[in-house]
Length: 574
Image: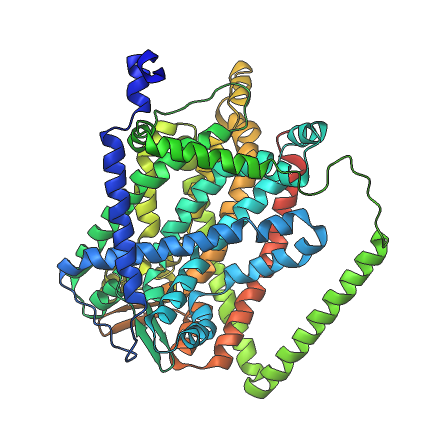
C-alpha cells in the first residue's frame, strides 16, 4: 500500500489522530451551544419586560454565550457588507460620489438613532417573538462593526500599488480575477486588524444593543450587556467586576482561537520583496495544521474558492470599450438625478421640520453640535499623539504585537458605562466641570481604531524599504518623517476617520453618565439625542441625527477626504 511506503513522519501527519477527535468534539459542542441559543430565539416575547436579568455570576456563562453569538452574527453581516458596498464605491466613480457620503452619514448616526427607527421594524417582522428583538440587537451591533471594516476595504482598494495593477493587466486578468487575486489579498492585513477592532466595538456598544428603551418600547435580552446595565443601575460593584472578568475570558478565548491564527495567516499577504520580521505561528494554528480531517477539508474548500476566484467573470483589461452613451451624457444624467433626489429630500426635511421644530431649536442644536465637535477634535489629536508611536513600535515587532493584541482588544471592548462609577464619584466629590471631565469617556472606545490601523500599516510596511532606510542611515526624526509616517499614512487616515466617527457615536454614552440615582449630563449633541430618544420625541431625534450627520460629513470633506486623496496620489507604494 502507498501508506506503507511513506516515511513515518509523513504517515503520522496524514493519518487521523487525536487532534482530529478533539477538533470534532469542540465543533460538536459549539454546534450544540448555537442550537440551544437559536431555540430560545423562537420563543414568545410575552411582555416587554419579560426577561429578568440575574446578577448571580452563575448566569454569566450563558449570558456570555448569547452575547458572543450575537456579535459573530453581526460580524458575518459586516463582512458581507464589506465585500460589496465599499467595493462598489471604489470601483465606480459615479457610485462612489454618493456611496461614500452615505457611509459617512451611517457611521455618524448614533446607536440610539438607529434604535429609534429600526426596533419597531424588526419587532413587527416577528411579532410576539424573541427573534425580532434579537435581530434588532444584531443590527445595532452591526452598526458598531461595519463602518471601519468598510473604510479599511475602501482605503486598500484605492491604494493598490500601480506596479501590481500593471501585472494584472499583463496577465490579462478579468475584473473578478483581479479582485480575488490582487485586491483582496492586498487588503487582508488591514481588514483582519479592523475586524478585531469591530469585535471590540461591538462589546463597547453591547449595553445599548441588549437593553432597548425607545419611548414605550422596553426590551431586555439576556447577555453581558444587559447584565452590566442592571449592575450599574443597582450600583453593584461586585457584579460589575464579574462582568469585566467574563468579558476578559471571552475576549481571550476568541483571540486565541480565531484572531491570532488570522493575523498569522494574513502576514503572508504583506507587500514586500524581502522577508520582514515574523513571529512564530500561534499554538492554535500549529494545532490545526497537525490535524488530518480539518486539513483535508480546508484544502478542498480552499481549492474550491480558488476555482471560484479564477473564473473569467467581468471585462478583461484588453477588451475594447464601446460605450453606447457618451461619458459626458452619462455624467450629466447622473448629476441631474442626484440633484433631483437631494432636492426632493431637502424639501421633505424642510416641510417636516417646519411643522415640528422651531428655528430657535435648530440653532440651539447646532450650537450643541459645536460643543461636541470641539471634544471630538481634541480627543482625536491627543489619541493620535499617543497611539501612532505605540502602533508603529508594535507593528514592526510581530512578537510584541501578538502579546499586546488581547490587551488592546480588551481595552477597546471595555464599555464606557463601566467607567461611570469612577467618573461620577470623582466629578461629584471634587465638584469638577462636567462638560470637561466627561469628555474622556468619548474616546475610551474609539481611540483603538487609530492604534489597530497603525499596527496594521506598520506590519504591512515592506521590509525592503526598511532595509533601504537602514542602508542610508536614516534615523530619528528623519526616519519618522521620510519613511514610516508616509508608509502608514493611508492606514492612519482610515483609523482617524473611523475614530472620529466613532467618537461622535460614543457621545451618546459619554455625555450622559449615570451611577445609581446620580446622573451627570454634559452639554452636547449626544446628550440631546439621548434625552430625545428616552422621551420618544421622534422629531428631536431626527433633528439631532441630521445635525450630527451634517457635522461629520463637513468634517470628513474638509479634512479626511483630502487626506485620503493625498495618500492615494502621493503615498501609494509603486
